[in-house]
Amino acid sequence: MTVISRRQLLLAGTALAIMGIGAPAFALDVAELNKAPALGEMALGAGEDAKVTIIEYASATCGHCAAFHNDAYKKLKAEYIDTNKVRFVFREYPLNDAALAAFMIARAAPKESYFPLMDVFFETLDTWAKNPAEGLLNIAKQAGFTQEKFDATLKDQNLAKAIMEIRDGGTKFGVEGTPTFFINGELYDGERTFEAFKAKIDPLL
Image (tube, rainbow, N blue to C red; front, top):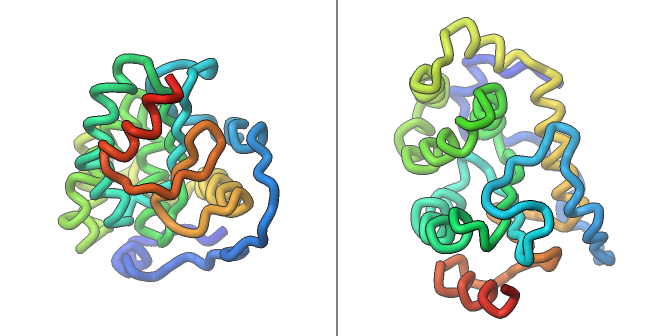
């Protein structure tokens, strides 16, 4: 695993090599899909016995992911997640070095700061992605990072490897791009609007 340097972060468009894309047809093992990764699950809302569980694989630099989180997700969170009707699981699927770095920062922050940081990443994507090294540092400082902690986090090869294992796990489940959603273990390929998710969720509650 190569340590992420500030120079690499400046090359926001430099994609990590993604192996196994275009996976063959297979029977999805729902039990394996629902198993928490070694790094731990990042989830909101209802507990593991929820009637409805939504799993999202997303990249911190994905414009489509940002569009979903800045609109439909906020409405889903207010109506279903914050009211404990639905369990929402977020899994990292970095598509480039900048996304991996953002996820490393979110994971290195206190757990209660993870989702607020993801909100900031998506809400300000157009700004920080222009200069990831500076942009991510500014966001990290707002979460209490010092320059030293920021640099150390980006050099944490074990953390980077653990996040990449989550991405590789998603690929095994047929994830080929972001965002990808599973609802109760079933791949959701519908529209990413609040109304479309609502139509899918309500009959399951």
